[in-house]
Amino acid sequence: MILETSRADVYNAPMSIASSTEQSSDRLRIYGIARTRAFRALWMAAELGLDYQHLPIEIGAAGARSPEFLAINPNGRLPFIVDDDLVLFESLAITLYLAKKHSNGNLYPGTLEGEASAWQWSLWAVTEVDRGVNIWSLHAIRLPPAERDAIKRNEALKVLVAPFKVLDAAVAKQKYLLGNDFTVADLNVAAVISRAVDMDLSAIPNLKAWLTRCLDRPAARKALALKAKADNETPAEVTRRIAKINRL
Image (cartoon, rainbow, N blue to C red; front, side):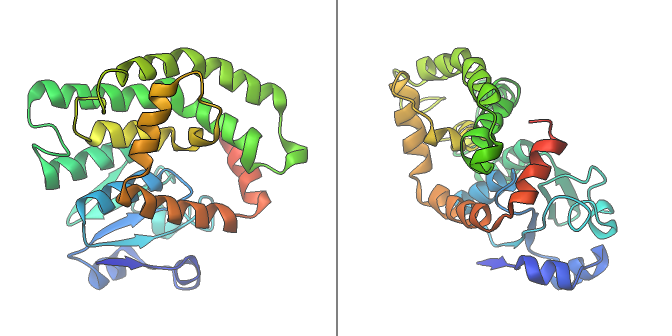
């Protein structure tokens, strides 16, 4: 069962940590609008079929940096989760934690070597491709056309050439990153580069096929629908603020 709390509900009735805990102490809570990296946690929760509450709070002073939410995650960033007594931030730490807790030996690799490979690809996604894909998506799609910077967009594409070739080679001879089965490694990398699905990926067909395969999973489609809805409802000034805060 998924309980979706609307943004209006979150803004009009901000909750303290105590009241939030009282309302749903036995339910995983995922904080963050799906347009953000919360998408990754939402996809994982859907893959696992978890009973959770989604609180789609926004970035900035009205959301993640408000006193109520800074008390939970002092970084003032999204996403973060509350699971029983655990408060956890950093999106890929969240997905790794949930996969290991609920699907150890399946979605989460059951061997030390498999676990290490899942960590490897998750860290690789953050260090090698996350920023480039975000810059490209802002200046190719998300910012108003008159405000897009073609130089930044093209530079981002150049930066992505080498790591995308690495990823293309990794899935050239097997369906998924760790073999023939979808794992948290695939979810993490595909979630990080999900906006790259709108790029011209014809020069790296293995990556394109793998990414399509990952994003076509029923759980991914559910999370992508939330993300698309959030994208469509995001005012231009918020997108500008995202680009400015993250220097994109």
